Structure formats: C-alpha cells, structure tokens
Length: 183
Image 1 (cartoon, rainbow, N blue to C red):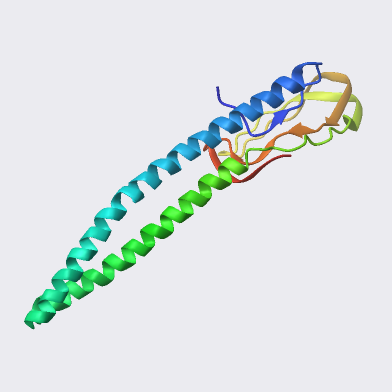
Image 2: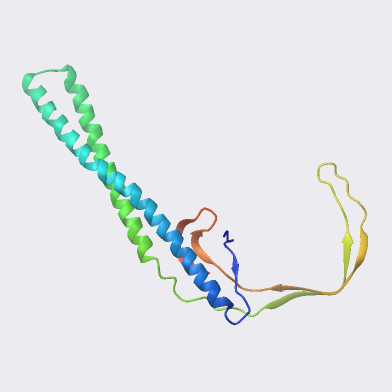
C-alpha cells in the first residue's frame, strides 16, 4: 500500500495509536531495507579487499625482483600498478568504514522520541453564502467560459490541523535521508 509522507492524526479514540504504530512499522521496514542494501555493498567491498591486498603483495614482490635484475621497461608499469592498488585499497577501506558508520547510525537512530503535541483544530476562515460556479478553461487555447452560478453553500469553513509525519525518510523512494524524528 502506497502512503504519502503527510499522514494525518485521526480524531477517533484508537486512530492515533494505529497511525503511530503504522508509521513506526513503516519506518522500521525502510530502515531494515536500507541496512540490507548497505550490508550488500559492504560485503562486496570486504570480499574484494583481500584480493587487492594479495595482488599488491605479488606486484611488490615482482617489482623487487625486477629491481634486482635491473629491468627498466616493466618496472614503470609495475610501479604505476602498485601505486593504483595502494590507492584502491585505501579507498576500499574508506568505503568499508563509511558503510559500517552508516549501519551503526541507522541502528542507533531507531528511537523516534516523544510525539509532538497536537494543536487544536483552528478555523481560519468562515464564508457565508459561498457561490458554487461552473467555469471551464483551456490553458492551451486560452478559452475561458463565463462563470455560471450553480448554487450557494450556506457556510464554508476553512480549517487548519496538525499532521503527524516523520522527517528523515523519503517515503516515495523509501530511503533514509537523515535523522528520523517525529514532526
């Protein structure tokens, strides 16, 4: 079921608890999914690190043999490869540390804290005898029909009310974007 990022407090007695539990469960699912994705990336980097270290050791050994033999041509290639391997190993270690920090942050960020205080529903505007019109327009041609009054609404009331939502989660992409908190 697709949910918008703006979920309302429900006025009924058991409504808010159901909505709060739904949001908590939805956030937990997104966090678990993000942790699984990071674990996959982490395992691929961890699997590639020993191979790079082994290849670096082999190239350094070959470089030392070439230096002992006095060979000039292959020495430059091997030296460049050793330099690239060292940079790749440092980058891989950096990625591993970053992914481990992300996983720890996601696991630690699981507590949502206190719920925000719900404000009372406020009436922002009252309009008596609000006219209901039928007016059509076409933006491509610029045509705009004259207003035809269909009837009147005795009292039109505009209200504002508090909405319960979570910050730090992109509900459309199902990604954790920051610290997860009630808003």
